Length: 334
Ligand code: G3P
Ligand code: CA
Image (cartoon, rainbow, N blue to C red):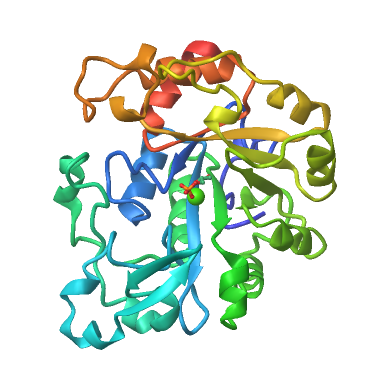
């Protein structure tokens, strides 16, 4: 039994690692709170999300903190810290020159001086009410918070951890496997039924983890990635599921509508691979034309309608910024 499930009555521990179809709160309930904050994770659990998703990157002293990218300007007040002004630098990231402050240049103590901010203040002005309220969370803090909420609500909530850019950090002397496995082990979560899933776009780290942990592994796939039988057969050897861009299941037509489902779900299920789709966002600007409500790109459209279309295509999980809205579609479907 793990800290995510300790104290729960046995009947509420699911027989699978996540219930399916699962609603997974992307970076927490990030449609309503600044992403990756404990407030976003607690809100997601309160809304009824089956699991939460988080991205991790390392600090200079090797602690995994919960951020989508290592550069901190977009989601924290780092630029307002005169004491860190000389740490601003320019680096090549994924073929692009990025200027700012990077987690892997700062110690955990330095990262802890920062406060989180909404990434999309114009699109999600309500979220800015939470700006400055929370610091950057560590992986351990999110695991602890979700565990506490699971016990409080007598409901096991899963945690899907995405390892960001492991090869780049390993090249800087900061491999992600060791701190990840150490954190899971010290919390009793390094086993197949802990409720934790590890994901990455990087195949190498998943292959290495497959021989070091029984925690379920998910291969993330983006538009343009190879999806043929050879590719899926290879993934099946080390992973338990795939996490795919929604367009790989329901592509969009040139005029922005949903096209017919692809064969991906069927081909994945033939190999016993679960399929999670990302990222469902409720604002009209992210929705297919038939699920928009009005013309304002910032207004919330019919996300439950999109979720229903993806569930009809057979997906096992919906990774979404708006878990409350995706849950409506699941409730209507089961
Ligand atoms: O869960 C996978 C999804 O989060 C990948 O996209 O860029 O939001 O990490 P990203
Ligand atoms: Ca992610």
